[in-house]
Image (cartoon, rainbow, N blue to C red):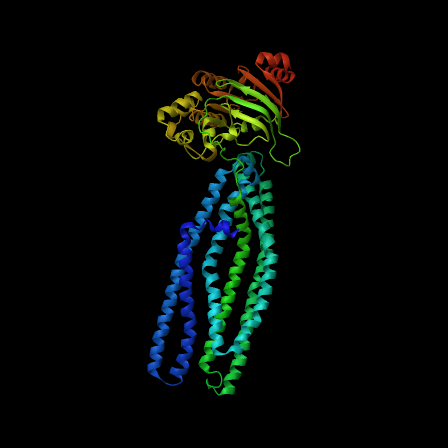
Length: 582
């Protein structure tokens, strides 16, 4: 896990190294101060030596200033390094997600990925800043202060050692009990984000059905679950404070008791016992040692919190797409020929049943093929195999006479345009959305594809025409307008294969017919696959495939199917039955 996360440090390695260097100088100066204070008391103040007082006072001031300067620089570089690390981490997660196949994406919910990119990265960022600052400062302070205290009185210094096992056992118990709770909290965060996202995207339906109270109660239930787990985890971690205080004050009391006894016994003679200055410096070192232990406990707590986040981030970074460029890496797609050769498919290897089973058919370049079938007949699953949104479990899918797994993925998907069932528009102008098909498209080319998709008629009515701003998700255009813009965007790629997955369901039959006519006349050499619920949308196709429960139930022209397929005939008659017949 650490090795995976460390790859995201990259250009911030220098800052990450410089921070501990400044920490070293800060600690060195801080540890020198008690020693100089002891000298100031014993050699200067008690001896009444003003020259020594001024000299040691100046050195003390210089050490204090150097300590402050080093601490400031360490904080500056630590902030820079941790912020940069978090920035790289977010980018690496996002970049890896872009490589995911649909199978990979199915393993992580959208809400979970958002949580990992935000809350989890922030937790890891805070932990990293603590690690390169406090996790270096505390051990250095502990070692230096302990060595210095041993030089003063090795017997009294052993008081600190007695408290270390107590602290270690307590921290282990805290970690083992708190970590599972934080894991559960972050998983619940995923659920919370999912509920919020679903509510906001479906807010119109929520209001239309007066379900605000239900949504509030659902949100409150999840929120209270987070509150409950977080409260338990924080209560466990809060025990760290009293335990540290017990160690600090216990050490101070024991040191003061035995130290005062040593001074009284020696008559404040440092040659035979402990002097006042040495006891003062020993108390200061005690505070430094115990404060360093407290710092380590803070770091430990932060690591406990961030560990669950780090594991979740690592899970995404290590996830490798199961779809990658073929060994041949072919970049040229000759034509729009399509062939399914005994193709079977299931979404998971653990699934008992294939979604598609022994699919066999071929399409010649330029043909128009309709795909008809009931809900759950796997129409969308079938067309997802052509641009390799998923890979076939068995058999071979060929485009242009070549196995799709031998192509360069980018080249294949540039040659196959898919207008998915769930149409998505992005925030930006109409032009920006259409240029997803070709970022270098001219205004004339944009207008041409919009005419083919019958989108120009409503675009011209907007005050800003093609510069009209589209809200996120296309919420300021109707369902039919959104579908036509998505078709225009797909046409902008000038594909060999155009797939319309129920992409005209929200437009009227007249507009649907106009779109099909335009596609037939304007792009005759492009293979067109149309998934539709309406028979009218596919009845003039060169070939119609009827799917039923993942199998090809029938295949042929409209006239052939009317004679040979009961399923097709039943659908056709149900859609064309007149009111009188009913």
